[in-house]
Length: 237
Ligand code: TMP
Image 1 (tube, rainbow, N blue to C red):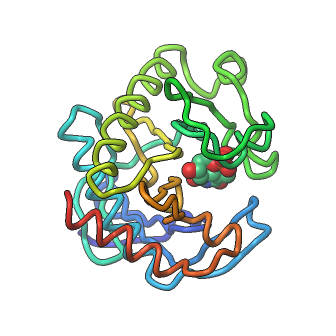
Image 2: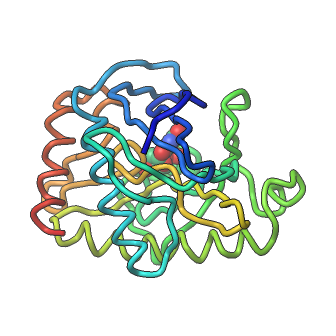
């Protein structure tokens, strides 16, 4: 597949056109940001790990009936994906209180919910990705009612599947963020990535953080955590 012009550069990935108008190449970088780009750094080898991990997990979800943008892995850092129009919602599923949930609602990190929760943020850096509800999303014309129903169904199904996969690896899936897109024919598919950048992954025994919180919170051992989580996934998938 021929790589053509760069269409977009995000905080962690670049996107290129290809000779196929319905396919794009995503290239994963080692760059890391936090707090809406305020904190910047690099995590050596992260791009390679996130590319591989996201592809393994998306293929697994695809086999379980959740459509994704994945077409095929091209190299260490590059993947061919379906061209989609990204629905500007960050869809966050949580099993355990952490991060902004713990902060916003004044609860301790680590409280296990009776049932998973879902929330949406408006994907808009200028506004700082504000939280919104389904009615806000409809009012802003970000997605249709049917699309929101589909997104919720896929997000909870992905949570069930990912929780099981990570459990086999001795890892607790605390929370994660998904993004969805519309293909040319309007089908809603899972897009973006599923990685330690976009998930909270804790060692089930020690509760050690094996995700991007090590970078966000300056905990050290960032590269090692990414390598460890990838090693466990490869061993158990
Ligand atoms: P939060 O607790 O900070 O809202 O994060 C919830 C989940 O979403 C966590 O697994 C990290 C992920 N996330 C992203 O993927 N991108 C972001 O910009 C933020 C703030 C969180």
